[in-house]
Length: 559
Image (tube, rainbow, N blue to C red; front, side, top):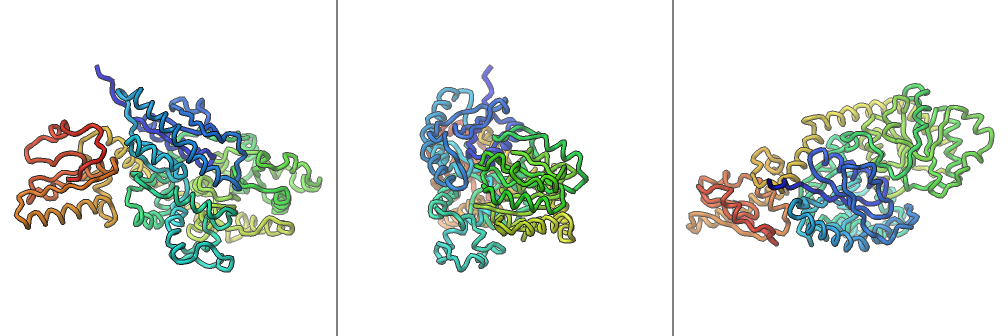
């Protein structure tokens, strides 16, 4: 008996905590849908295979494994990854296809937006590729706007305009753009330009929900003519797992159990964001003077003296007592879901953002760099679930730290924000239930991925047919082309219209194949077909047509 061919997906995460986590969450989700998962990862910051026994792991030599990465050099590090990892991945996947080709076919390469070399690898191997965006749609909008801002003379940014609103991106100010405070802004702009060329990628998967960014997703859709799959929050669709590269300290949970409901301010500023000792001291006294219980993540492995808290005056410990708890790294999802947590002081990385709003926890938004600034503005000015902190933690800011904590945790302003956060949590819960927007989008993604192994037409209920109304959609353009050419041929006396156009994207062939074009024009046309297949002739069974299809066409025909 012939072995059943498996649907294999290659996942390529960017090797940083905030990028690895959502990629592994996506892998867990798609594995539960029947796909075989191979995670191709760098040696640097590699995930622990023992935590994912159902996955296959493929290490890519990177030559960069002894790096001390921070926000100060990650641009150059990412650029290096895209140079050093390309050939090793291409060779490894080529060998995989040769070895297992009779049983498995690589269905698609799903890669982090910053590992853009994967697109070239996919093209070389004639495999569809899909982007996973681990940042917000609001952030992607700023990247999409870069050519316009350069053309209009706004970039390079000028000091005098940093507080001005960005045209067509309000409420963002120029200081909120993700590249505004980078020393190597030219390098970052080049990285962004490379990372957000969709090239021949077939779709974008988003760890977001329509209730969070419906307007932003719609605006992006006008510029990217490929399907979007907003399936977030992904962490709510997978069981709790140990997907942290950093070791978590669970002692804080027992401490939280002793606190009253909604009383604790949780402070964690991310896996890369850096605080020096002066900032630590200012934060410490601000927390102490706020009179609120606090759980504080102090990352001693980011260059901070691990005894910095112990070096604070004895009066600090006397002031805080049992009201404070400090850890090196916390089980964040568990913390945010805890009944005692009433606020989150965050750097506003997208993972932290979506984890917080999913639990209805309002935020103090202290961004450092990149997309964090866009997210902070979106949370505070658009969603209304946070207070943006724009002060520097310098000497004399203790009082301001105390004030902003009390604004969120005690004052009337905080009550309004808390109510909005609760409403947003309820909307997110609806989105991931059966029939919700994220759940439906996940079903659509699964169907489109699986369709590469099923040549039957998905029909009018398919994702593409249901979403072909946008004038910018690939389906709409295809229909428009057919109609124009058909009218031309009919006017010249042809009894049947056959239209051919060279298409380079193998995923696009399948998208066209899934639309009932023949039904649309069956009253006037005898020969209409879509995709890499010959025209559908009246009276000829589709399976007969499929037998004539080349197995690995370099390009396809649109009939």
